[in-house]
Length: 370
Image (spheres, rainbow, N blue to C red):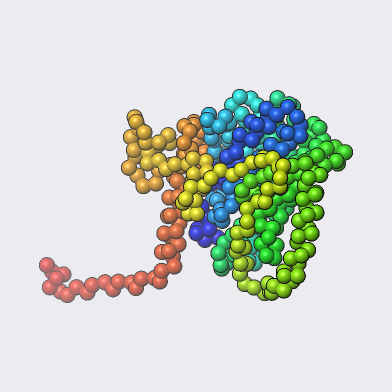
């Protein structure tokens, strides 16, 4: 795969982005009712994939035994990940609250499928969240991720599939449907689902977009709004039928236009809203700001007071919070940005035509004697 498709991150570092909205876990731990805790856990499961929007770059594959450790005292968690298998590539992670309120662990085995114009990544593996205060364990799997136009055209990403979050103590279940883009892009990024008890009775409805926010409300109010919406859509059906359909033989999957933001149903409750991105987030180096990566010119720990910069090209990639990671960690080697730049340079050199060999200079007898 060309180096241009990679971003200067290890997959172990990218897993840490699950914890960007860790406040939802702390909120769930403080909720007294199981239904309220399931709402916060469902919002956390959706927020874990929010950072993948416009992230079309592939992280570097970790080496077998490579580790990454991050401690965020300001957010109240400790995180460590390790590459535990090379064939197939399996990454395991473990996180715990600094106040002993939760445990978050699991393993990810991304199964890639190439469909000609797109690449589909199915993140196999179970994710577990334990709320120690309530003696509850929640499990789920992430939705399928698809990157379009990998050959030609503009790259764009979507998530689709069904995610089931199970509370193994109470039997409650949250079913979330990540909608595919569809023909006209109307369902792009949409998430709809519900929370049911062990008797399969719907207790709460959830809707929103995994790139923006998540809302919820009572099932009766939700069904009433949907009936009203279906009546309105039936009136527009005639206009949509007159629109030309997209041909199956198109070479490029057109990037769907951005639809209106989430239409909030009256009486809804806000469960989660994505953090605001900086203006330069469209650049490939945007990945570093999600977890507070920064570039250090010296040893691990930064080039602050009392630290002598090395002066070498490259440096280290590390977290803002100072941690003491294992010597096998990806923060103790050369930066992935430097690796990607070196690989890009070597690729450009390989594409150049070979230089003509230089003919040796012919020496006459006079020069030879001198």
